[in-house]
Length: 137
Image 1 (cartoon, one colour):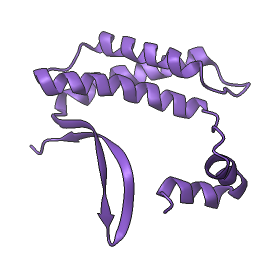
Image 2 (cartoon, one colour):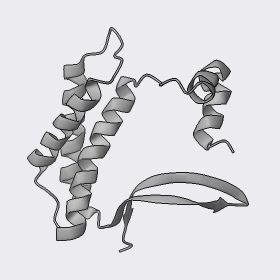
Image 3 (tube, one colour):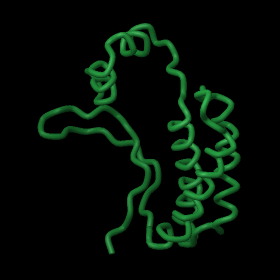
Image 4 (cartoon, one colour):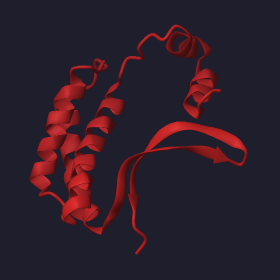
């Protein structure tokens, strides 16, 4: 069974699909993915804490978590010649700070990083992960 991302990859580029899924060669991480993963990690840590305490972490602390995650991701990332790791890090810091200041206070997580699987309209959905589930309110 093909996952939605496998189908998308195949439709975009059949050779890339073969290299990634047929030969199981690693797919180089680009800067957009690295930035998204680092931001995701910082917000995940915040919401795990919020699940237990019902309080967000301080914004500067979450930005520091982002910086650590960014440094880890940057070491595994292929950057284009016109991309600046420093500029991308600064963008990520600003995005995390803005999210923490404007959005996170309104989020009441009920769960963080839950594995899900199932069926939608008769189509089997492969095991995946959802980031956070919020309480209605």
